[in-house]
Image (cartoon, rainbow, N blue to C red; front, side, top):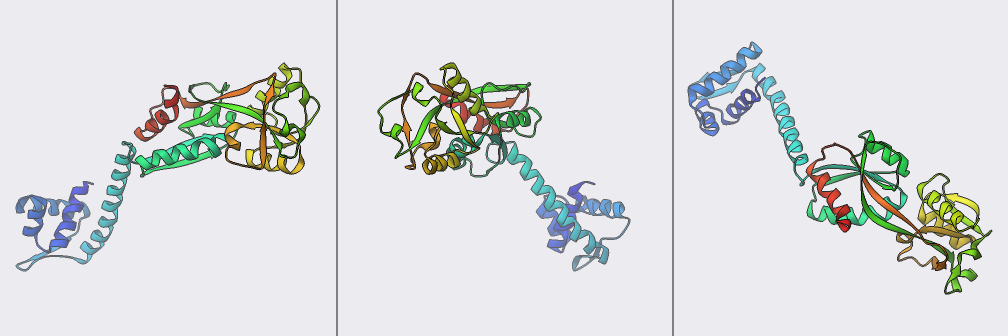
Length: 291
């Protein structure tokens, strides 16, 4: 059905007269009359009563008018949403990342973006890099912040930020008072680690093995805040993202020599996947430091 026919009926109902309604629509009176007749033929019922005093809805006309307002409003709302998604002014960005990215990278980035585009909404998922990469490859997410390299196929990954992994200790730990600690001093000490199999844990373990160091992981946790609190309470050590300890006083960063641990966060997107203007603009903001 042509929604213009329903709109014409609504204008007539609001105006109470064919002549005035035709003026509002920019139509001639005969053209509007033909529209109403076409609508009545569509429903097989009379919708308007015409008299010298104007035009009023019949009983069935009121039924059609009520439903027509719902249909027209829904269509206009849908059209508006589609228009928003086609511009950077609106729409929803579906993005995911690991605990570090979601907690310490995305909040500031989203806040900066929404200052310029307040109509854009974000759906954010926190999961492991492998899960996020899989979601992007399968189209469940548009963007993913992942630790490189990732094994998922069909992805295009742009470098985003280098994340330095640092040693932390409680303030009363003897290592916290040293200016620099050789990596050999960590051999056999107790550590709080990230979950086994996580990308950051694999990087830390591989770097320490390359340096000939074996640590004793007595506890595994997922988030940096939980690890920081546990280190402060138990006296164990931990390797965490430097971004995660900025501005907090529960633990101290310990400088070490003999090993340097860094991971690169990349922005994953599906190869050949067209993105909305809002998503494209946010992706460009995230990767701009590497341009």
